[in-house]
Image 1 (cartoon, rainbow, N blue to C red):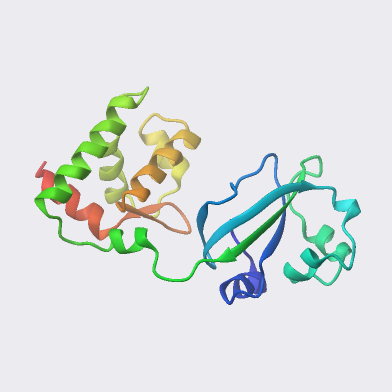
Image 2: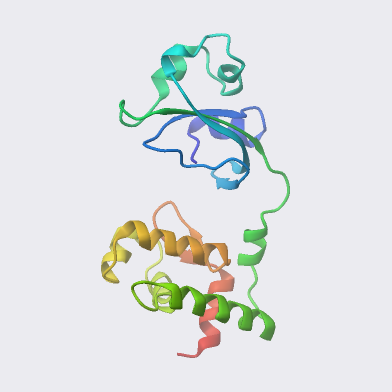
Length: 196
């Protein structure tokens, strides 16, 4: 989830704990932690609501930092035929374990063994053949390049390519940028270890 303008500040300082989103389907799952541009949030609940039935005095309207129900409806984006979701969440304090992992610039033999095994598993389960090393190399060569352009270069569809890059990110090997990706120090150290 992304938060725009003052919403980002409100989420970051813990003042905003609710959001309304118009999506084709729910994009967040209850109980999961998500990284956002305002920090990490944990989803407490997500449910579909009728935007026409939102009342001015709903606690969730205030928790979303909206003036009234009309303000909520006015700010909804996306196709008007899509359902509206009410997401309740709270800010997660403390360092992000993925960021700490990604910041590692040296890898032990055990780290390399673990990473190699995980990446080999990704490759073996793939319907389109081995992809991990080629994807890391491409991101290293072309940081801040649109995902669609990277996917095309590898002969892949954009959506599954982005899901695969997310797997690499979860291992601390890449960072997402405003446009595209870059290797993390850990990702660079891993590629350097391959000597190819």
